Length: 236
Image 1 (cartoon, rainbow, N blue to C red):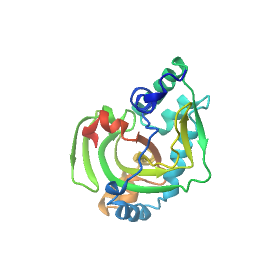
Image 2: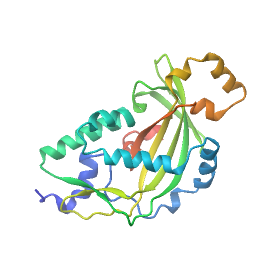
Image 3: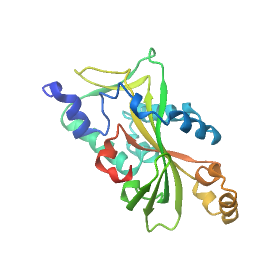
Image 4: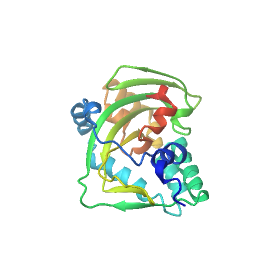
């Protein structure tokens, strides 16, 4: 079972799951926008703990019986499918892994970048939109093309997260104190899109919180450890 372990970290990351067990150690070069993004999120009433909580919940669900359904609820469609397919491959290869909780790890988050996507169709993967055109730096502004009827303007956040929860591959070294890069996208409640008056009011006074978040937003995980970014660099 463990004949793969010599190079399993790289093999596991690239061939099975869109997750890198090795994680990141030195993140200083990536977090120059941390403070400005943190201040912006505070104006949206979004806390650090919300991102850590969402990431932990996802990792914690991987071995659950209803993981396939949950993955599609909390992740981009393509990311969810890659996790589901990866877990199936792991079972076929008779490899095992487990979730590890290390209470000695102090959970942390550092923001790396933000992006505003316009013309987003919530019913398809972000990576299935056509002709992404990105401008700016922080936040970036990416215009998409979609045939959907209800198109959103969405706010995306990238962050390095150090979590008490990690995934350990059997027979291989576990590095629970490293960071993992996670990218989130907020989707406004579809019911709020049908209020034309509220939408026009938000645009006229440029209420960013109302435009991107509304009153009952849903966060989706777009990417973990930049695995999707490597496959679809034009969206980043």
